Amino acid sequence: MDYLNILTAEMSAITLTLKLSLVTCIFLFFIGTPISLYLAFKKNKIIPIFESLVTLPLVLPPTVIGFYLLVFFNPESVLGKFFITITGEQLAFSFSGLVFASIFYSLPFWVQPLQNSFEKIDKKILEAGTNMGGSRVDLLLKIILPSCKRGFLTAFILSFAHTIGEFGIVLMVGGNIQNKTRVLSISIYDHVEQLSYQHAHFLSIFLIFFSFFILLLLYYLNKKNSIGLK
Amino acid sequence: MRGLNVKISGDFGGLNFDFNHRFLDYGITALFGPIGSGKSTIVNVIGGFNKELNATILLNKNTIQDENHLSPRLRPISIMFQENRLIETLTVYENLKFAEEKSRNKLCISQSIDKDKIINDLNLEEKLLKYPKSLSVGEKQLVSLARTLLISSEFIILDEPTSSLDLRLKKKILSFLKNFNIKYKKPILLISHSIEEISQISDEILLIDKGKLVTSGKVHDVMIRKEFKNFFGKFESGAILEGKVLSKETKYNITRIKIEDEELILPGNFKKRGDLIKVRVRARDVLVSKKTFNLNFFENTFVGKVDEIIAEKETAFAEVLIKIGKNKKHQFLRARITRYQLKKMNLKISEKIYVHIKAVSFDRQAII
Image 1 (cartoon, chains in turn red, yellow):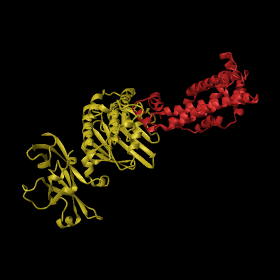
Image 2 (image 1 turned 45 degrees about the horizontal axis):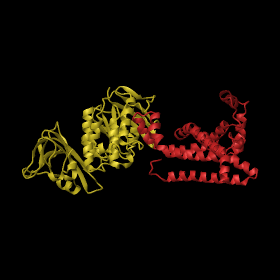
Image 3 (image 1 turned 120 degrees about the horizontal axis):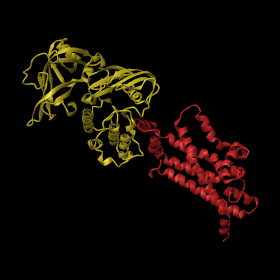
Image 4 (image 1 turned 180 degrees about the horizontal axis):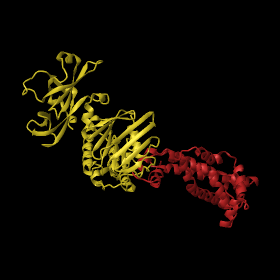
């Protein structure tokens, strides 16, 4: 009975977390995919600069990213102002701000597996497609995207899981507002601070199992060639 | 000026290219040369996939490439690449449809091609719904060939189109290609390592070595010339005789053909009466003698003149090139004998000589 109460109490944190991860992945599909395509197929001298920029969130402490995002989200800043004019809401300490930060933070987890997957495509088949008169869009829709289903799946699962697990950046950018920015990781931190260990245990174990099953699914699908995913 | 005009120069892949040729605007041209001589690079240049080499390409009066570079997808050229390069995510039928539909964007005037007939001729009906992954290497090659022929274009390049096929299928596909070429009047550039294949269907041969065009001309004219002997060295030396089918004897299952003024007997039943026929004669199957035998006793006897003698100093062998037929219209035969025999016979250039070829030395592969 106790656990049911905890679950009801934490439901908003759980749904908010899943919603954040899902929305982030949807944005990453549209933002990260073109970046992966560009990095995989364009070969020029500035590519390494782009690659480093995209990977940067992987190595920087979340506090550094969080700090600068807060600076950019400031209603006085260009981005902050722009966002307020179009949505009437400020970015800092809002769900939109969290999505914004998560896109940035999870970008390498979307771009890298997808870029790898794109790079594995035999360029010679694309040449043959071009010789047949196929445009870039034709090649993208008929050859590139369909042969990278597995890359997309990996990118989705990794980004989704990574967004669920983020803490530092969420704390800095979103704070701890019930129903708005209080995701699971923040909630656990909060409960530990207040010494309500039962809640913290419950949520932590939930996260451990959830993350484990997501990764299990990923590795299982990666091993299984026969289902036609590549 | 109709036809394809290609001029390529520059360095690429360790080769210095110097290629300048105007291709026949009909028929089949073969590109022949050792491995690593730059054949596939030339294909890539014509297709627009090599930007390192300087090239000027004209096709039927349209400039495809000079300083400007027409996008590869708009070039009215269809290419069957060496590897099959099928789209693995599409079925066989979808692969064919992709070629047929997308190539409509190409800048060319081209008649539509009977897709069902190609599918039928290449025996692909039952493969249409399969994915390339489930096909054998040979089947993939046939799909790739069908796909290439369906591209709407004004010039076709086939880079080793039959390399994965067995002999029987190879023969079938070659005659299919010849018929296709005649029906649609679209010139074909055939790249092949097999001189048999080339002599069977090509109208012209280009020899290429280390990126350079060595020579071009009719297949048996080029093959017979001693300066290019090294090119064909790894193949059994021989010659190709051209003739007409005279008659057939079903009782003995033989075909009589007329070559110049002589008669040649082939075991088996080939072509129709009056058809042109080419026969490859291996140099080692040719027997030469100075004296007349009873001609009725020997089948396949020719009278000729010694045209050239090549003694291979480091081996036991020599080759004699023999001109047969009247002076104006003559053909050549090549005979391989030992140097010892050459000395014993004391052969001289322009000397009259009798040539005998055993009828059983012709196998099915020899008939072209």
